[in-house]
Length: 510
Image 1 (cartoon, one colour):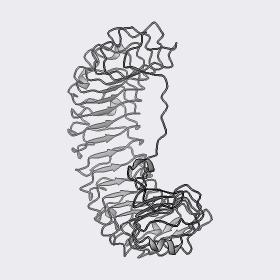
Image 2: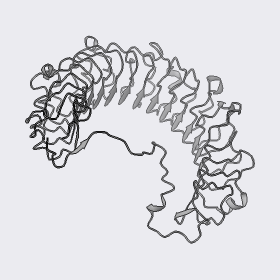
Image 3: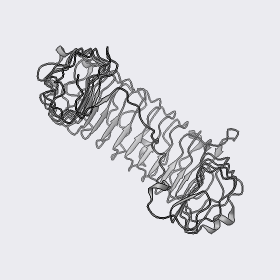
Image 4: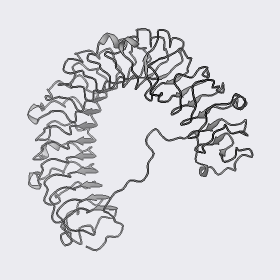
């Protein structure tokens, strides 16, 4: 088939190098990003992209660099071999606000830090306990993975404000009584990936933290929700603990909570009783990923906006199971045990604000009835769908993304007019079904069409006549060959940029 102007033939997608989320370092810009001339005084081999920034990272330095300007506010010394921090050098840098010492050889003993510092990174060093004499100005602290030989630690009485991070696989097993009683300005507390148990906390551990908004206790050994949670708390992460029962009494103090994460706790069928979350009247998002639940919890907070419940054992969705949460905009029930016969036709009736519905990985053989007309995203991949009836998609004129991948659909099972009312649909995924040709009468607004992994053996001249906005077309792993794609198939597609025809019976060049 002759090449079409403007089309990029895609045979293999190889992602380029990427930076993992959270690893970006905006404080220390790349030297090439600044058009300003370097400052006059800059330590040898270091770079000084701005008057207040000194970057000496990755130089294998064994000694602290001299000649650092007194105007420095941001200093990066990560990825070196420093063993100590000289008091004389650091005491000159009274305006230093950010100090990055990640991946050095610094121990806990005898280190002195500038009194005005706000952000300190000491991860991947040789610290065995919380450094003494931390600056009162500290706002962000990133501590390292402790040495394997260190015994479990107790959190001391350091004054840290307003953000304290004791994560990255420390060995904290207990927070002594009163250890945090003076941290009244603390806004964020990170204690994940430790060895905390119920006996390591008491009712006063968090009760004096009158400014606390974010508390992360995930990846510990807690068997219950901690007591004494402050009313200022907005986000509480208790994921991957040993919690078997959620008690309403433990949550009554946290009246301002908006995000509650309980994923991967062994709650089972009875661990979240009716009205357990009713004290949280302003709750916005509830994560119940992999908790062994067999039903949607009853009497959820009325203002809940996002209910995330994938990988549970939910097998029934009754007419009133979601009636208490009419304001839901996101509902995720993916990878449960829902069969079409056990999803009531009025299950979604009250969810008039729902924008995203994920029912992937269940046992559905039919599209659910009564889908909310405000839906933007509908995910039904990896079910057992064998037929599409236009009546069940009627009214979904706001739907933008529909995934039907990994089902058992054939072209003859897609009823006439199925796509007629999906006027806003931009992404349609029909990959890995049993289609023998491109389905007709596709939505005109379609921009991305996934048909890979089917049984398509030919593409006719009118296959995409009704989809002039198409930008990306995926036909990989079908039964196409050199002569089975019409030369006129891609005419009238001025926006088409990607056509993937790899892994067919013959090497197809479009």
